[in-house]
Length: 398
Image (cartoon, rainbow, N blue to C red; front, side, top):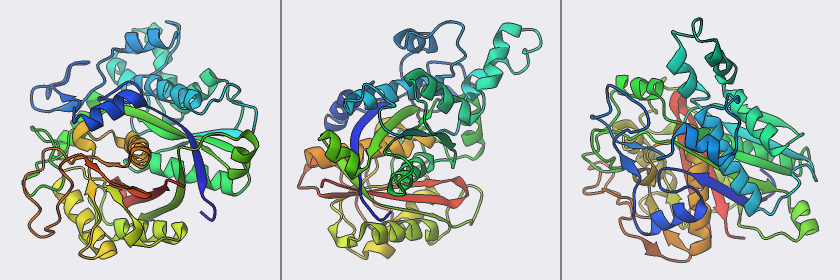
């Protein structure tokens, strides 16, 4: 990134709210959205907590005025709700008035629908429509079609760093002069496949997750969608639009250490943060708040902590994980936390790291545990995915 990119709109739906306002209210009043699984059946439903959006697929379809003939997955519907809010927030009525693109990300895709009928497609022809909405790109195309977008559409799937990479890609398209405006973010729904997969890795907690705690037991899965509207500074000058904040730095690195674990010294995380600082042209000492990846797994929190200490030394800035509020929303996590980072900048707040009791012995670093008011000019947000795909974003107030 050689130029900062303006953010003019944002939208979100998660376990703690159906829009930006509701999410912010939950954050400042420390209301988490974790509960037992309700929307579908699972053999693990009484063993885990999830960040579930308490709306059925039928309720989502009704809210969006979708026809019963449509083959929208839950992933696509959540994404469409968040994209529509982001466009409204940015004051965009004609999505094609300037060169506009959509970069969406997902891990689950349409799996929440297709897994229900996998064994019955031959006998249930009316359900075969969901096969074509199974792949990751289908949700992006459905969202683009619903908002009438005629421009560039692409999909990114790099596990839990997906939305960060979508945001980065959108910024590159603007900085290279390819597009004037890009809608960027991610969406993921809960599914049996995801729950079973994470259960097999033995990293799901049977309690509320405790990021950066010595006694952490694992993560709680969640579902969400969140999107930002990125615009070039030239586009902002022409429209005289209100800016919510700026993306000034970004970095991505792959440590290629293991399929699901980060390298022991957090090499990928360290390199991603290092690159982000290089592109932002600011010093680590200027960061006011870090929204850490903080999944509450043994591996992530220890390696991310080591990487933080490699970058910041013994003076790690105020940091917290917001995953105890929403659960880990996989491909949507980075855009959910980008929205939270922008709200932090706007309201000069550091969010509490819920459920924290004792520091990781080796690290001896302490997350913020109470809502804290302070001047915030720069926020760093980390998102690290399976396979060692690590991404860091730096946001600024001006």
